[in-house]
Amino acid sequence: QVQLVESGGGSVQAGGSLRLSCTASGRTSSYDMGWFRQAPGKEREFVAAIKWNGGSTYYADSVKGRFTISRDNGKNMIYLQMNSLKPEDTALYYCVVDTSLRWGLENRASQYEYWGQGTQVTVSS
Image (cartoon, rainbow, N blue to C red; front, side, top):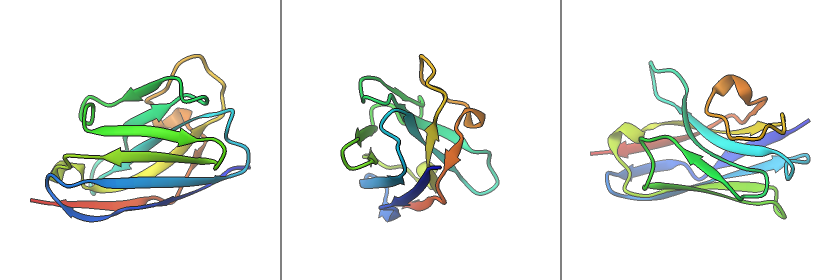
């Protein structure tokens, strides 16, 4: 069983930065992990994913070049560094785990078994 707790959300002006953290309880060092987000009235949206060993990453086009995903398996944590934030980045951000041991990285929400409760990010113009 895996439990995920996100932190680091908050309110920031457009152009600012935030760093989200996700602490995992349970063994996650062998699993791919990622971030999704959901804005009010919208479906959950893939943001970024990272392979179990940190060797490969995958980003949504909307955040590529602005966001960076990373992980520290020794601490059972993953991070999302968000720079050049835009009002359209406003959403509840979720940390996720994929236990399938698949070859590639997934962008479909249905493929991630474990989800945190989310941390709110609000970007004002």
